[in-house]
Image (tube, rainbow, N blue to C red; front, side, top):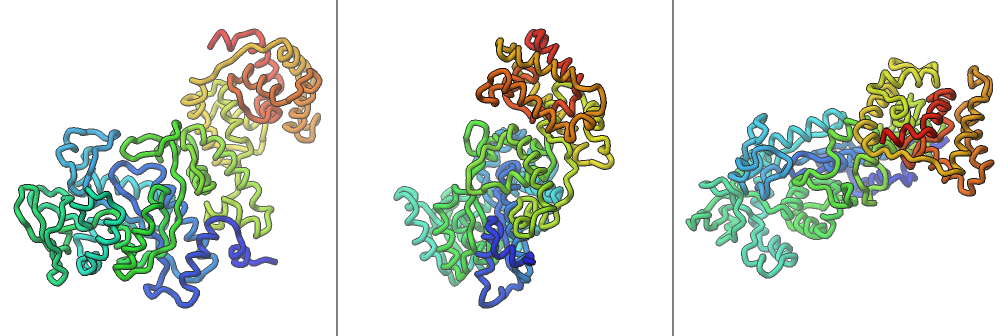
Length: 535
C-alpha cells in the first residue's frame, strides 16, 4: 500500500510540485534558521481584494504539501509594505479630499478615512488579518513600518548602503534614461513634510550609514538609513526583504515576472539566497480587465462570501493558478458544485488520487464529508420556480427529495439554500428572459407533461430505483421521440421556456426535487404564456 509521503513525492498536483522544489533547497542540510519560511507580500494601498487572499491560500497549500514530504518546521509570514507612500487615492473609500492632502506619505502615516484605526495602512492591514483569521490560516503578520522603525531591517539597510553602487547597477539597467538621472534605491522620509521622497542621492556614506539629499524645499539634509528614516524602493525592497529574512518561497502575479531577475540579483548582492518563485496568472473582472485594489473592480472577499461558503473560494483558487481567470459573480455556482463533487469522490479514492484531489489541499489533508445532496445549481432553479423568499421556503422540497436531510444534519446544505435564495434574487431573477416555444418544442413539452401526469401518484422510488435518473431518461426519451437531433437544443428549450435561462440543472433531478405534479403545473403556466406576459 502506498504511503502518503510516497504518494506526495510522485503527485502531479501543483502544490506538491512546488513543495518538492522548496525541499530541494535543503537536500544537503537543514536551514540554519531552523525552519522553512514561506512569505506573501501585500501592498495595503487599498482594501484587500480577493487576489490577496489567493496568494495566502495558495501559499498555504504549498506549505501543507511541504509538511507531508519533509519534517523541517515551517512558517508563513504575511508581510505588508505599509510604509509605501500613497501614490493615488483609492476610488472605493470615503473622504477622498482628506486623503488627497496626504499623498506620498507612508500609508501608516495617512489618517484612516473610515475613522476606525490610527492610519489607513493599519485599517487595511486589519481588514486583511480579519479575513485571514476567519479562514483559520496559520500565519505571522509583519508590518514594514515596524520592521523599518524598530531596527529589524537596520542590518540589511546598512548592507545596502555598502552595496549601493552594485544595487544601482542592477536597477539602472531596467530604467529609461530620464528615470536613471533621478533614481535612488533609497527613499528618504522628509522630516518636514512626512512624505516619501523620490529624489537622487547627493551622497551615500556606507561607513556612517547615512544618505545626503535635497529636501522638498531645497535644503540639503543628511539622514541615517536606519531607524525608519528611509525606505527602499519597491523592487530593491523585495530583494532586501528576501535577504534579511532568508525567505525560501514567495509567489506573485505575472505582472511581477519580468522583475524576478532584479529581485534575485539584489538579494544576492546583499548576501542572500533568492527564494523559490511561483508566478500566477492574474484575476480578471467581468470585462477581462485586471482586478485593481484602487479601482475596486472584480469580486471582493466579502462579496464572494455573501453567496457561497469559504471552501468554494479556496477551490476556485486551487484551479489552474497559471491560467488567467475571470472572477465575477457568475463563477460562484460552478465553483460550489465542483467543490462538492470532489468532496464526494474523495473517500473512495486511493491515496495516490486523494493527494491530487483539490479538497486534500483545501483542507490540509483532512476534508470533511459533503452533505450537499442537492447541487447549488438545482437550489437556484428551485428558488426560482418556488418563489422562495428565504431558505425555509426550499426545505419543504428538499425534505421530500431527501427525507433524511434536515438543517441540523446537513448544515452545508442549509447554508447553501440560504446562499442560493440570495444569489437568485440578486443575479438570476433580474436577468431571466422567458420565451414561448416553437411548434416542435410545444408538442414535446406537452408530451412531457402528459407522461409525467401518467406516472403513478405515489413514492417515485416505487417507480424508479433512482428517481433523478429515471426522470432524466424519461425527458431524454421525449426529446428523441420529437425529433431533436441535438438533445442539447431540447434541454435549452426546457430551460428557456420553463426557467427563463439558457442553462440549467439536470432536468430529471429538478423534477424529482420540485415534484412531478408541480412540474406539470409549471409547464401549464409556461405554455399559457403567463411567464412571458409577466416579463
